[in-house]
Length: 615
Image: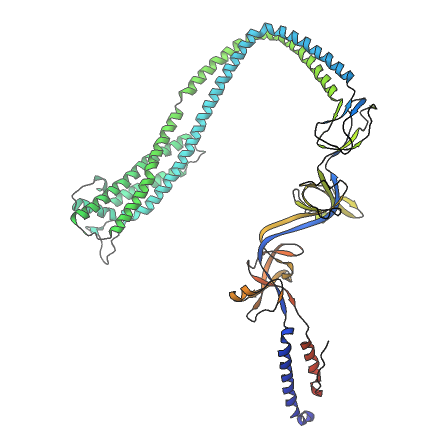
């Protein structure tokens, strides 16, 4: 053993005691200042978007230099630079004297040709009138025939569709009926221990029991139930299943006769099922009357019998109208298929076609003469149209609604088709920006854009991406693509040539779970959050967004999460945590005087020095 330590065996315990006293004293005094604080965030449901930003300029959407199609002299300029005009308004007039004279000559030519045409028409007027009457008669007959045929076809299609709808409802109801009444026709509701209701050796169903009571005690024989309720039920159920199989084989695309066949057999089946329901309801009524008349107590509760009676009544109210519906559908199909109107129209159309051929032969010779006069008339009208078009070219009009940007000619000046008359711009403004290939790959037509202006700091407009250049331009090794954005609304203060800042929203999600991005931690190739686990009452009191000291009941658990889209401040949570859960966004640690004092104190204990506090 170390001799020095041995000699100091009484000093060391005292020093140790002083160390602990000093440590716990300082800890108690300065504990509050040294505790770590945390900023918490709550998982919320909201919206998040990712954007691409760039700067560009305002330009007019459309800008053209207007020229004249003809040569001439400027007689009048109707608008000044900066004035707004509507589409089609006249901007410049050229001298029209020569054009008006050509128009008058063409009009006289048309008048002469028209008179010649009227003389030629006189010879064919009667035949042409008769021919037109014949055509009209035939057209009307054909229209009536097509309409009648289409009406019948449409009615048949509608009726077949109505039939399928009615069949679907019937077979669904019938299937439900068999499921709900099977127990009363095949089983007994009598549940006494080691006892059963039977005739001879055979246990009987509720319905057979009802009939047994009516027949033996009430003395009334019902032929419908003589063969036995269970046998009748199974036979009808088998018939139902077979006919339901036939129903399943048809559709709207099936031939009409197949649909009609299923309708006919289903109509018969519906009548049979309705008879079953009503015979059984009648039997239950007689059974209850026998019990009442004879003051008998049934082997099982009348509540069961009443419930069965209600089930039968419910299905009676469903099947009964379906029987009527099937009957009406059958009658309607028969009426549509046997239509005398169609046959009469076919005969009339044949007669009208023969009459039309006779009228055409009578008109043929007269039309040859008329054709020559008609050609002369058309030529004259073509010349008139050309003269009008020539006159119209003397008026320079606005191709669209816009504004005069520049006028290049003066009144009295002679011009040619090569002369630039004026510059015309549209009122609709667009934004042009340039993006690098990485950002351009994120852009799609129609994406929303938020626009701000250096010259108008109080103005904020929106727009949509209207055009993406299909070919990039390379400058100094960097490929960029031109993007055009059309403004949703205009502001008179915005002028072509102004600089603009565009923020294009390339991805946006709403009603998703979001967290501040600094709450997401990464480890290897996965993400996680520091999830707060604490009893509900304490959880409600935790404040988010400001540094706080966590209660001692709080537990922090690393919770893996899947991240969706994110921007500079927020991240989308796909799964891993739920709305309302609280996580740690950041940790605030203060290096207090206590920790520094304890560090100095630990080295100075052997010399028994009082540590100096750090400032």
